[in-house]
Image (tube, rainbow, N blue to C red; front, side, top):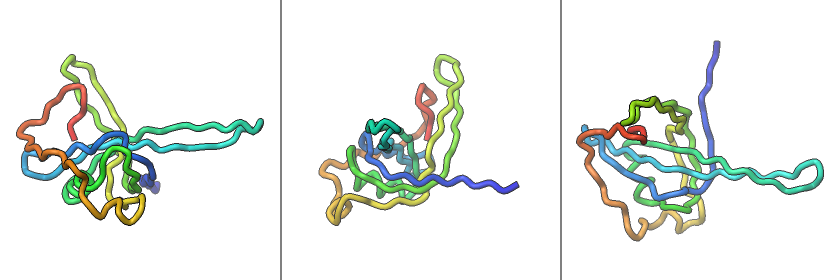
Length: 137
């Protein structure tokens, strides 16, 4: 049986990317995108829906995205779906579906990625992953 797991999205970031360092020093970036869909109903009424996608990436991809994009920036990403499971502090089991970004492209004109954002987020070193209500990435 064949299988295929690929996601392609174009959207705008809903918040600034969050860059962390894993215990071995690997960069990890977490961000979310809003992807809009517009259509007309049979009666001619215009409708719109928004899908919010949680994304993550590692290594040089994570460092580049965290450095050059911010909330509201348009971004093209390609990757695969991943499912994460963890236990919250209160003992409940949580799950989340995320996009593991494997490649990306800056959008929004020639100056969109030509200069770093004005206030780059501070890079943090993670010595221990917190297992609270948010899954580790």
